[in-house]
Image (tube, rainbow, N blue to C red):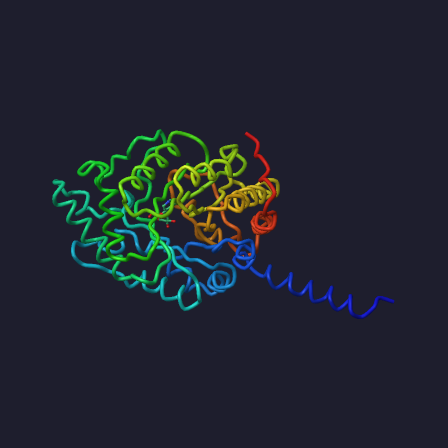
Length: 349
Ligand code: 9MR
């Protein structure tokens, strides 16, 4: 017969284990990271199956769409921040930290901004937009994605309306204006296809180094990390993130993780997706300067992958299926957290 004391200890241990592994966020915090987050819009909060998952599993909320320019100043001089307030208010009420996304991005720029013709006017419009939006949320956010997707995949500058009129100066202006409006919030440069080596990663590193050398206030780099299941495009993810962190001296984060599957999803592909989630989360865990992981949504019911031309023929990128059943991907993310210290396995490809 077992002695009562050890049995009690075992039970307490099991109970504690279950408690600390109650959510992705509590598990990742236990591993020394700041958060496991997700992106949210108001429609997710009014979905009674989605909201409780957001509340239970995640410690950080990124505003998926509500703080983009097209939502916040669609008409010149008329700021509409109510939807962003809904998301930020919910997040703070639920004790989450918040990442604001994204101040300056070529996507969804209103026509009146696209039509600006002079550098002088663009400077003043950028300054006013950033000052108004950042001041409104001053003291409430953990971080802002200040500039999003400034480079092409070959490392050249993207020809956005901002770049056409101001050249690389627009990035400096944006970081300085954001810092003046909220000196405490962390300011991030955010981009995709920088989770692996290549000219784009090199361009991001060079820009961050230049900004730091010039004293421009930049604090972090976000690697979006939108992946395709098992396509071999991510070998050496932890090494690339480590290189990004070491060569810039900045904190980094995985900001928009998802893993899309070529239709139709089947058991084999879902198992591979499980492995990709594990591998990706483990890559952040392996890099001391990586502060957290954010997935780009909760349920396959709502994902950009279903709406975008670029991802036609792909599906099911998230950790809960359309009926809110946890997928194998969830277990993969948990394993990625718990495998701390183990080198992420190398993917095929
Ligand atoms: O998930 C977002 C989707 O709902 C929007 O329609 C789309 C266009 O604004 O943007 C999606 O999010 C993008 C993010 O803002 C920047 N990185 C790529 C994301 C997926 O397209």
